[in-house]
Length: 232
Image (cartoon, rainbow, N blue to C red; front, side):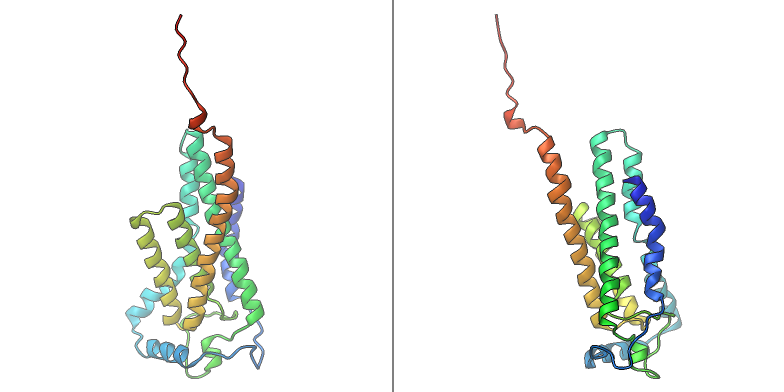
């Protein structure tokens, strides 16, 4: 598991940066490029940008590179404990977070390649502008899907309010930042949130069916342990 985690940490920045790779967008896209609501929201945000807001939301947008941090934290916790059951559980938690992101990124990039939706400033050239240099397809938002996959996995592993609330506030802020900087339509962000959340839920279900079920089968049920005292 620790070797897989190390490989994930090495590959994650490369997979995430693949969103900025050159992608050929057809002259006549396969879907309608943005509807009225999509355009109006981005136009409103663009018209109300400020230098301070630009710095804040660019930082929030770039913070998605920290998405592997919870997996690292669980792996470190596993290494630092001497109790075997806790160590195994923490490594499985780290694995769930890792595979949620890998599956999510694969699904996101595959959808981008199939749909090939132009970015907002391409669809509305000369009208909408982006604060970042990104050239991949627009639908769905990869930053948003990564953030929501991390937030959902972490919330499922540690379902405590002081974990769930900050995790989803951060994921929501990342999604908003992608609209603010002009990188995505609102519908891209909404779809990214669904893809990321769904990926995490699927990996958690697989974890329950495989790892948790195998642990339950390997642990004798206490209902069958009957203490017997024999007196002579």
